[in-house]
Image (cartoon, rainbow, N blue to C red):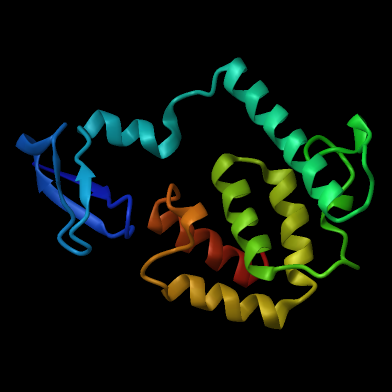
Length: 173
């Protein structure tokens, strides 16, 4: 039997013998040093491990902080009300105001990350914004689909999952 995993650096699928589990080796594509997981570790990195209450609370706190900083940088306000932060659980989507210039690639990356994290409400709101500029979005989706090395923020998303989310977004589902 063999171990299959994706290189942390280039995202390519790597196969190696079970005897190398838990060691470091070189990716045959990019020649970077990679950790070779055991089959059990590989399942855990895909996201089967449950998120603890502390981890979820920390993610929410970090998201609120990020939203506040984004609003401040845009000059919207010095203090964003607590009930207007984030996009989860019916929160206001003003962070992604359509009247502001938007980096479409960032929206698409945010969509993929929201889908990978299971934040479906946020992903749906992002998808609506992306669909409003279909031509620009399709060009970027096509490029991201064929890029050998995805943007750095997407490194933790397995390549097949990334491809599926991009196809889903392009199809408009």
